[in-house]
Image: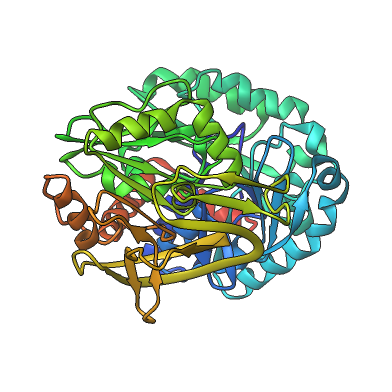
Length: 481
C-alpha cells in the first residue's frame, strides 16, 4: 500500500506506474483504493469509480470494476457530499454523519479487497490524504485503518518538490502511534529535480530518524503530464503553451471529469487555458467549453458571480464557439429544476438560454459507456455518461450526437457554433477531435488519446524500474523480512 505524507504527493501516478511495471513482468496485478474523494469519476463494470483507479486498471491491462474503489465520495458543497458504494449512489452525506458512520463501510471495503486478492498475484493499494491526519484516525478506512484491518504493509511517499520532505516523513513517524508506524516498511521520495547526490545526507537522515528503509528517489516524471489527473488541485497546471487556437475552460467550483480536456491540451495547434475564478475568459478564445460539475445549479450561480456569463455573451457576439459537456450542457439550456433537492435546495433557475433544452434533476443516475457519431461530420466517438437528471429538447432542436443504439444526445444551434451533450471523453478519438478542431481552423495531430496514455504508462514503468528498489518492494508485498 502506498500512502502519502499529504495529498497530491503523486501516489496515483506511482501506483499506475508500478501497476504497469509489474504487469509488464507478467504478474496479474490489480489496483485498489478503499476510499476516494473526487468528482473525477469513470465508468467501470458495475457503476462508477475514481478516475485514478480506472487509469490504474488500464495500466494493468484489465477492465475497471467497482471493487477497485468500493467507496467514492463526491463533494457537492462545502459541507455535503454524495456517497457511492460499489459504484452506486448510497445516499447524501453530511460531515457529522460520515465521521460517525464511515467505519460501517469497512466490511464493504474488505470484501472488495479480498475479491481482488483472489484473482491477482499482486494488489497495489493507494491511500488517501495522509495517515498523519490523526484527527481522522478513529474509524479510518482509507489509510492505516484499512492497512491494519487487511494486514497490508505500507510504503510512505514524500513529495520533495513542495519542500520540507524530511520533516514531512519524520513528522509522520512522530505523530503515528506505534502500531500504525509498524505497518510502514519503507519510503519513497517523489518528484525530485536535479542531482540525487545532493540529497544523500537527507535520505540517510530520514532512514536514521524513522527506522524505515529508503526504496528510491523518483525524479520528476514528464510522462505524468500525459496521464489523466484526478485531483482538481492540479488544474492550474493542466494548461498548455503555444498553439495557434485558444480553447478556454472556466474552472467551476465543483468541476468534474476535467480529464475531458487532456486530448486537446496535448494537441500542438491548441493553447488550452484553464480560467481560474476571479479572471475573465480571454477574448482571444475561439472555443469556450463549459465543463462537467457535481452541482450544476450552484456552479451556474458561481459562473454568474464570476461574470463569466457576460464573457460568454460577448464571445458569442464576436462569432465564437461554445460547447457544454454534461453539467455545462445543462447550463446552456433555458431552465434547470431540482424539485427533489438532489443537489441541495429545491429550486428552479434560468439557464444561460443558448440552447432550447430544459433539465430536471432526478434521483436516477445514468452511468454507462456510449459510442456513436457526430451528426455534423459523421466522425466517430467513444465515451461515457455519468449524470443525474433528464434534459428535454424542443422539437425544432438538432441533436449533436447519434448513439450506436439509434438514440440521440445533445443539441446544436443551426449555425453550429453553440452545442452541448452529456458525453465525457468526447475528444479521446482522434477522428472526433479532428472534426472539432477543423471547425476552429486548426489541424489535429491525429493521435488516438489511448495510445498516448499507453506510451506514457510504459515510460513511467521504465523510469520506475531504474530508480525504485523493485525487488525489495516485492519482498515487502510478500511479507519477506
